[in-house]
Length: 117
Image (cartoon, rainbow, N blue to C red; front, side):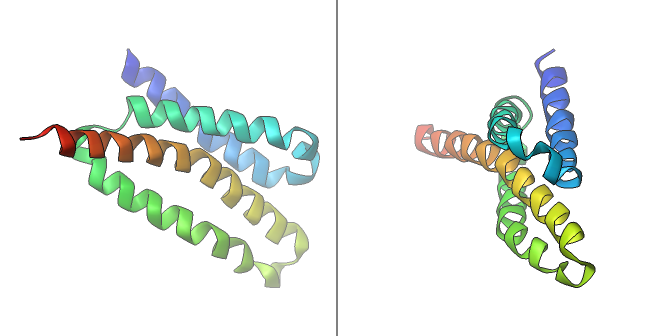
């Protein structure tokens, strides 16, 4: 049952991130609330979806995603301000979603490493 909630949280986070990117201008008044919701969904994903076997792969993927998100918006400057804004909005929302999950998984990893004898 918990895995099912984690899957729903993951899908909801992705959908919200895409919507924030596509409708960046329209969601501007609600951006703080949406980012908080993405962070909460990221925490849920980090707690419920990532198993001990997946920790290293997830942390590497999260690191690459977060590090490349800032450059992603700049890569679309040739397509105009609207496209660049949408891509930047999506990248920022995705970062707001993935970063809390990465923190939770990193803490799980540190706990697992520290508890082994």
